[in-house]
Image (cartoon, rainbow over all chains, first blue to last red; front, side, top):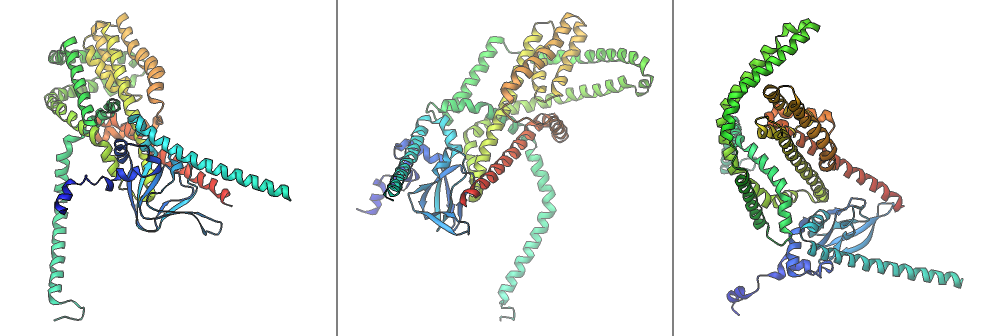
Length: 173
Length: 374
């Protein structure tokens, strides 16, 4: 088709919008288009240079970040100041979601590896939205809870498995 | 032809031109800087009060707008609905009570004021004569003379300024709704844009701080205004039980002065007491009025009911700071400065407290992390 006409008939670039991007993140996949528009007005878009620290281990956390573009390294520091890599995250991944619900210190450090655009969702905005748009906010919080409980289940299964295997090895000895 | 420094002649000429123009414009800007600041000062001088009042109106109306917004009404529409309801309420009150006779009241007060003043002076004289028996040196100070001249000056000031302030109040009726409409609609966006300017490293902290400080400030201002309204209403009800004149004006004075901590209620009491003393004399009604001002409005209502409910959630200032804020505010902006000095001081205190608490948790958390890592 003539590009001139295709431009007119194409739906107005929803796939490029922030709302569409947010809808692809597992926490927010229960949200409808209207809810995503609201969420879009709640989040903050932050631009990072390569090698910039997003947060430090021990900082007071107040929110989560989704990666729109770029790469983020999550790591811990050992006694000698060496970095122990925990995860390497790319576009569509999210991190720091535990701090969204409670004012807790961060348990790892996050640093960008290249020019990165992060979408931040913070507790102050969630608390405000709880009063204004209860239905949408409860969907967001439910998604968050599901995500965290998935991880908790995975972790406890892993612990259980390890406990069993160590029990067996002790028994065998 | 290029010379030793590597510049061509044209480049040197350009450099010379740029330097001279920049120096010339620098001198011009420096010499006109004082006129520019003067112009800025005159341009913004009348805006202080309307902006302040519309900020207060914004703080007061924001919960109502949010309440409507929850019903999926857009923010602009809900602001219009609130404005419409307010207008209807005012019209309803006017129809119900009838328009207050401000003009008549003003002229009556103008006629009565000197009378009240001279009678108050008389009482004071009698008091002083009694005192002079005990402390003879008081006679040297000629206190009644001083008080009466300053009171005359004050009266003259009021008479001169009233038409001017009527103009100003008229413009306030136009400006305040307009400003507060935009504050209500766009304050969130303005704040977000301002916060977005902070560097990435401090962004979370600034966002949290802004959230806490604005919450505390909103509650403080809302609490104070509600307190003043309730005190004014109670004083009005209490006074209208007696035969005292000017009950509405006295109630308004009591409400407004109640915004000033410690000194305010006492100042607000003075005109009511004087009028009661002159018109009604010392009797049952006079003591009832004193009772209304002191016991009912201040001690029972304000101290035991309103302050614990409305203000106690917000951190309170030490009395010394309150008095300092009142004095400094009065130096800067007169009576209005005295009233707003206290909220400004408390918001500074809230900000400092929040930052300190943030840092404390910050360090504590860091200390908590260290043993875990080894």
